[in-house]
Length: 335
Image 1: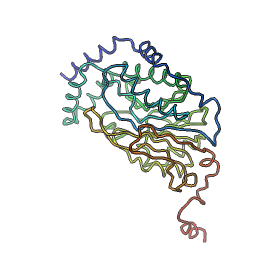
Image 2: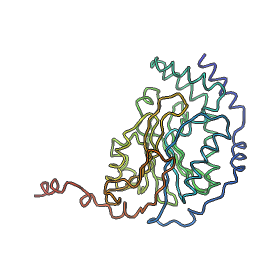
Image 3: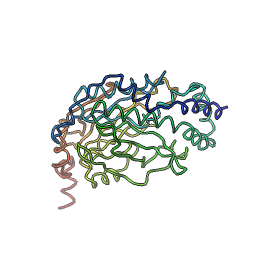
Image 4: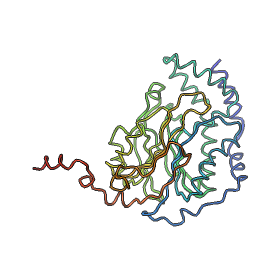
């Protein structure tokens, strides 16, 4: 029954061409373009992170309106880039007919982990077409309409017979500036058969070079140093619905001398799934923050957190010795 329901629902969605419909719905919103990216000064940029409340959607228009509400809040605050949490791109699956019954079937699978790999592959194979179509067209159109950059989280793609968790970065013209496959997977993803990305890239943008590293990697310092070696000044570390040690991200920012944008997630909404609850935060090296704690801004409540950033403070003048809080340790090493 699980496969039959899923296949029927996904076929209905696949028969409906989404690209033109999405563009028309975005045009109907009469969005006023921002001029925030017309002039960029490294010492005075504005960045936003979303604390997303995942929910079901009644229609494609409902989905676009909700996604646009976050982007509009960021754009109205003068933001030049807004970042969403991981797997935001999978939310259009709730538009599928029979979604409630599908969720019930999915809950039953949690008691059969031996079947999870096969079931997950079938799910992604069935929904990947319409989900990616809606996701790509929605954020491509929104970034072009608002004229700001959007990092709309990630979505699952099937490629070369494998499933990848892929994050995208859109320019202010609606084009894709970069794509990054997740490097360090959650336990669920490993069990479900998701494959890891093979490389880490930093992408050139108007704000400088930007890398995308899921917050699941916050327990490892290596990816952040690799991004820094590629001259990344901003790293997007979106929180995962599977749960992360997001508080470790600020230590990675301090070690690597970069600004980190950590988009958050607000509970499970009405999806009927157990999702993590994580803050939205912007981190930088300790010497670049007022409280010398590595936190530029953090919220558990606001839907969109926006802050002004001085990239030169965090990148150009970062010195691991002067910012270290244990000078006695280094004194013992060199005495």
